Structure formats: C-alpha cells, structure tokens
Image (cartoon, rainbow, N blue to C red):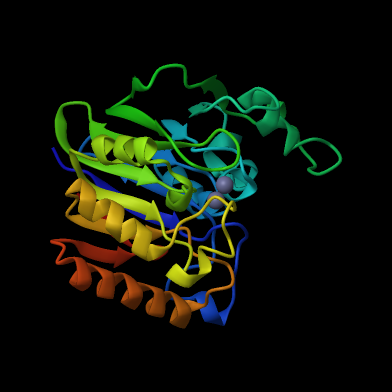
Length: 280
Ligand SMILES: [Zn+2]
Ligand SMILES: [Zn+2]
C-alpha cells in the first residue's frame, strides 16, 4: 500500500502570489494525501481553494480535513473549499483544541459577519468538527499519530499511514526545533522512527534562527539535522517564508544540501513546490 502527497499550498504566514514565487508557489499550507482507496486533506491554508476544485470534480465527497492548528495560513482556505459548499458532501474537520476556544468556535470566528459574508453554519455540506483527544486515532482510510510541536498555541504534527499499513508520511510544520528541549527533541526522533517521508518546517536560513527565536519555526539545516538523527531517508522542505522568492528558496535548498554533505547523511532533500506530488 503506497501513499502520495500533493502540495496545493507550500507557503507559510501569508499568501505570496507574483512572478517571484511561480516555481515553489504562493498559496499557504494545504496538502492532499492519497492511498489506493482513500483521500485525506491536511491543513486548509489558501491552497485549499485549488485543492477543493480538484476534489469537487469527483463529487460527492466524503472526506476528512486534518488541521495542525488554526493560524491563518492553515485555515484561511476553508471558506473557499468548494466541497464544503455542496449539499450531499460530508466533511469531517479534525484538529487540536485551541487555548482560547473550541476548534469549532475558532473556525466559525473566521467567518463571523464582520469579516466574511457567509457563516460556517450556512455552508451546504454536512460538516462535523471534532477535537483530537488521543494521540493515535483513525480516519477513513488512514491511521494517524499526532505529535505536539514547538509553536505558539496548540499545534500538532501528524504521522499518516494507510489503514492496511505501508509507508509512513509525517507532516511537522510550524515547529521551532531551536526551542525544543533535549527531551522534546528525543520525542521527535522517536516519533519519526518509521517515517519514509518527512515534510518539515524549513522557513529560515540557518543564520535567521537567532533573530527569529520564539517565532515558532525552523531552518532548513535544523530540519536536515532532525531527519538525519531520526534515520529518515527523504525530507521535504516546507512552509516557505513569504520574504523568500524562488531564488532565495533555491539558496535555502543549497544550504540544506550542504548540511547533508557535512553530516554524511543518507538523505534525499526536496523543496516543496505547489502542484507537485511526492510518492512515499
Ligand atoms: Zn504556518
Ligand atoms: Zn503557525
């Protein structure tokens, strides 16, 4: 049983359309994970709009959206996710409880009348919103293991495996490795032991991590070091900085490749690009 993941949004913080972001994309985080017989959406940044149009061609839709957390760049595409608008669709949205309200309250608040023309409750699909209460759980077609991350607010990474086994894809974004204690870092390494492909926050050049300490993100080099320590064979650099155009992201990739050589790591590094798929 194999998995594939397609990036519909790779950017962090805020969408960055324009001629300088064509190669790696300007939409914020949203991915489609597919096995032979099931589909799962992970995060719903602005990339979820295109993802929803892709899925809508296959209507009726019965699927799960896993949310890592509720910062704008991970939920802002939800109101524009076409399958949520169609009667007959059933969408389950699952994510961590937030410190300042339930997940349902936070998602409804981004569609409050002051900021959006239509409330969440007016959308046509049957929408079920639930909070993650156990570290291991199942959604239709997949087994999920959640991993608490180092990021302001309640944020989770996810290890995703097909319901009948097979390779593991792990998604860990909005994770500040520089803020992880030794115990937390060990927990990350242990959580990654079966991972074939790791999609990790790689927002910064290594020399940016000091001035951006506490912002909740990692450098590409830190992501390489974690993948190497955990024995992961394939790393995808994700959550591109809105201040980095395509050329800057290529340079960031080169910094990561140099770290692979320095460490003597058996690690393939890919830069996440909007519209591209990766097989696990
Ligand atoms: Zn983010
Ligand atoms: Zn965040």
